[in-house]
Image (tube, one colour):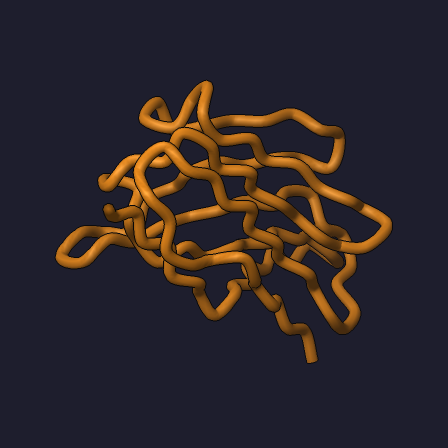
Length: 119
Protein backbone atom coordinates (compact mmCIF):
# COMPACT_ATOMS: atom_id res chain seq x y z
CA UNK A 1 0.00 0.00 0.00
CA UNK A 2 1.31 3.42 -0.93
CA UNK A 3 1.71 6.04 1.77
CA UNK A 4 2.99 9.60 1.60
CA UNK A 5 4.56 10.74 4.85
CA UNK A 6 5.10 14.44 5.41
CA UNK A 7 7.34 16.17 7.90
CA UNK A 8 8.75 19.59 8.65
CA UNK A 9 5.74 21.68 9.59
CA UNK A 10 5.54 23.79 12.71
CA UNK A 11 5.30 27.26 14.17
CA UNK A 12 7.56 29.98 12.81
CA UNK A 13 7.73 33.75 13.10
CA UNK A 14 7.06 35.99 10.11
CA UNK A 15 10.15 36.17 7.93
CA UNK A 16 11.29 32.74 9.04
CA UNK A 17 11.84 29.55 7.08
CA UNK A 18 10.64 25.97 7.08
CA UNK A 19 11.41 22.97 4.90
CA UNK A 20 8.70 20.40 4.25
CA UNK A 21 9.48 16.86 3.12
CA UNK A 22 7.23 14.18 1.70
CA UNK A 23 8.42 10.64 1.15
CA UNK A 24 6.48 7.88 -0.55
CA UNK A 25 6.58 4.35 0.79
CA UNK A 26 5.34 1.36 -1.18
CA UNK A 27 5.41 0.85 -4.89
CA UNK A 28 4.34 3.75 -7.08
CA UNK A 29 4.82 3.25 -10.80
CA UNK A 30 4.79 5.93 -13.41
CA UNK A 31 5.15 9.06 -11.28
CA UNK A 32 5.12 12.08 -13.55
CA UNK A 33 4.56 14.97 -11.16
CA UNK A 34 4.77 15.88 -7.50
CA UNK A 35 3.34 18.87 -5.76
CA UNK A 36 2.32 20.74 -2.66
CA UNK A 37 -1.13 22.09 -1.88
CA UNK A 38 -2.39 23.99 1.13
CA UNK A 39 -5.69 24.65 2.81
CA UNK A 40 -6.29 27.51 5.22
CA UNK A 41 -9.29 27.52 7.60
CA UNK A 42 -12.47 28.37 5.75
CA UNK A 43 -10.77 28.31 2.36
CA UNK A 44 -10.50 25.85 -0.49
CA UNK A 45 -7.38 23.78 -1.01
CA UNK A 46 -5.05 25.56 -3.41
CA UNK A 47 -2.07 24.51 -5.44
CA UNK A 48 1.21 25.90 -4.12
CA UNK A 49 3.88 24.36 -6.34
CA UNK A 50 4.45 21.45 -8.69
CA UNK A 51 7.48 19.76 -10.17
CA UNK A 52 7.64 17.19 -12.94
CA UNK A 53 9.98 14.23 -13.12
CA UNK A 54 12.05 16.19 -15.63
CA UNK A 55 12.35 19.10 -13.20
CA UNK A 56 9.93 21.67 -14.60
CA UNK A 57 8.39 23.74 -11.83
CA UNK A 58 5.30 25.86 -11.38
CA UNK A 59 4.30 28.13 -8.48
CA UNK A 60 1.24 30.04 -7.41
CA UNK A 61 1.96 33.76 -7.74
CA UNK A 62 1.78 34.41 -4.00
CA UNK A 63 4.83 32.23 -3.25
CA UNK A 64 7.03 32.97 -6.25
CA UNK A 65 10.49 34.05 -5.16
CA UNK A 66 9.95 32.75 -1.62
CA UNK A 67 9.23 29.01 -2.00
CA UNK A 68 11.28 26.41 -3.85
CA UNK A 69 10.09 22.93 -4.74
CA UNK A 70 12.58 20.16 -5.40
CA UNK A 71 12.55 16.38 -5.64
CA UNK A 72 14.71 13.31 -5.37
CA UNK A 73 13.40 10.81 -7.87
CA UNK A 74 15.57 8.01 -6.51
CA UNK A 75 13.96 8.39 -3.08
CA UNK A 76 10.43 9.26 -4.27
CA UNK A 77 10.68 12.37 -2.12
CA UNK A 78 9.56 15.93 -2.71
CA UNK A 79 10.59 19.00 -0.72
CA UNK A 80 9.26 22.50 -0.25
CA UNK A 81 11.67 25.13 1.02
CA UNK A 82 9.68 28.05 2.37
CA UNK A 83 11.48 31.32 3.06
CA UNK A 84 10.26 34.77 4.07
CA UNK A 85 7.12 33.23 5.50
CA UNK A 86 4.07 35.42 6.01
CA UNK A 87 1.03 34.97 8.28
CA UNK A 88 -1.06 34.34 5.16
CA UNK A 89 1.02 31.23 4.48
CA UNK A 90 -0.58 29.63 7.54
CA UNK A 91 -2.37 26.47 6.42
CA UNK A 92 -2.27 22.70 6.38
CA UNK A 93 0.12 21.65 3.63
CA UNK A 94 -0.48 18.46 1.65
CA UNK A 95 1.88 16.72 -0.72
CA UNK A 96 0.59 15.07 -3.86
CA UNK A 97 2.04 12.54 -6.27
CA UNK A 98 0.51 11.93 -9.69
CA UNK A 99 1.13 8.71 -11.54
CA UNK A 100 0.01 7.00 -14.69
CA UNK A 101 0.40 3.31 -15.36
CA UNK A 102 -1.49 1.02 -17.72
CA UNK A 103 -3.55 4.05 -18.79
CA UNK A 104 -4.77 4.57 -15.23
CA UNK A 105 -4.06 7.91 -13.57
CA UNK A 106 -3.81 8.05 -9.80
CA UNK A 107 -3.46 10.78 -7.20
CA UNK A 108 -1.76 10.07 -3.89
CA UNK A 109 -2.02 12.44 -0.93
CA UNK A 110 -0.13 12.95 2.28
CA UNK A 111 -1.91 13.33 5.62
CA UNK A 112 -1.12 17.03 5.86
CA UNK A 113 1.25 19.01 8.04
CA UNK A 114 0.37 22.23 9.83
CA UNK A 115 2.36 25.37 9.10
CA UNK A 116 1.65 28.33 11.36
CA UNK A 117 3.29 31.70 10.80
CA UNK A 118 2.77 33.95 13.78
CA UNK A 119 4.65 36.24 16.12
